[in-house]
Length: 277
Image 1 (cartoon, rainbow, N blue to C red):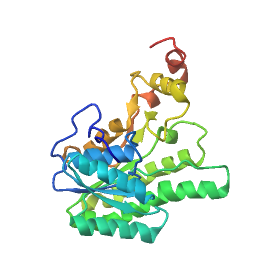
Image 2 (image 1 turned 180 degrees about the vertical axis):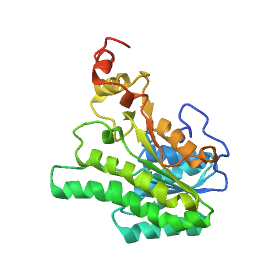
Image 3 (image 1 turned 120 degrees about the vertical axis):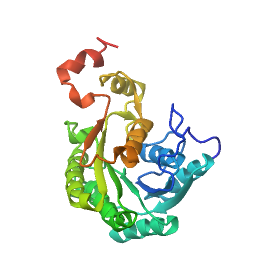
Image 4 (image 1 turned 180 degrees about the horizontal axis):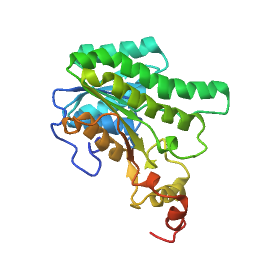
């Protein structure tokens, strides 16, 4: 945990006041080092924008690591632990954050696992965390969001929900998260609660860092911009949906993928194989 923390906005200055006075919960936001996943980056950026952030992770050491990074950057955070498949643990974690911070305004359902090993148990576990867990967190947060006068729920899906990757339960569960998003947007709109979904592409994150340098280069080429995406690109999009600028947006499913899902395989082949830089 030593050393300077990652810059709050990646290549940009992430400090501001968009979320001043608000409290945000970010699931799956634990970390172990300076190479941050989307949850940790989102937590750090939200805190830099003035929010008190609940760092919720299944691993208490990972949650504490991100909390320290936030505080080193001058932000405020609470480390929370819960298995998202455990309803009682989720209820307690959400309650503790709202009680200690005095309110809850934003929920980012970022946590996700891809451990489908081809067994029924593996399939069920992925759905329990990726879909049921997001539902449990949102339902636990609902009364606190209402009490705060409304709020924002941001679900984090994947391009695996829109395109075939052989990802099994992971892609199916992320597709279900899209449906959960629009259903909650419908149900909770009268409460002043907006519910939206981000669809990250092939980001350079701990979860997506596969195939070594060659795999990283292929992922960079496999989008319309030819630019590598990082956890910060997802975090900035989450900040927009969490903040006041998006007050008239709900039920949206927004790709954060440099156009990956807008192109055909034939159209991308020249870029991926080296025909275009």
